[in-house]
Image (tube, rainbow, N blue to C red; front, side, top):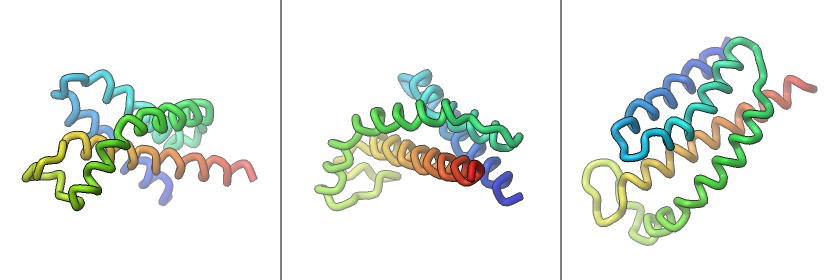
Length: 120
């Protein structure tokens, strides 16, 4: 039962990420970035496993996140300024995107481990 609640939370969280990125200059990119984890969570909700999609998605996420690494180091060097509200000289939107992708990667790792546990 707890897994079903987590599945629903993941669907809600990443569905809202897509919703808020629809006004972005590249909304298709963000739909493609978050839709796979929603599909994996939906499959899991109905006791199905989407292992192939999960593997491809994890690889794509790692490549996508690598584009944000320089911004992440700039954020660290500037003393971890908040990226909500006042900008403080960092690209706040890039940091929001970076952390949403990291959250997506964590959810992907969680599903990977969960599917692996089901096999054994």
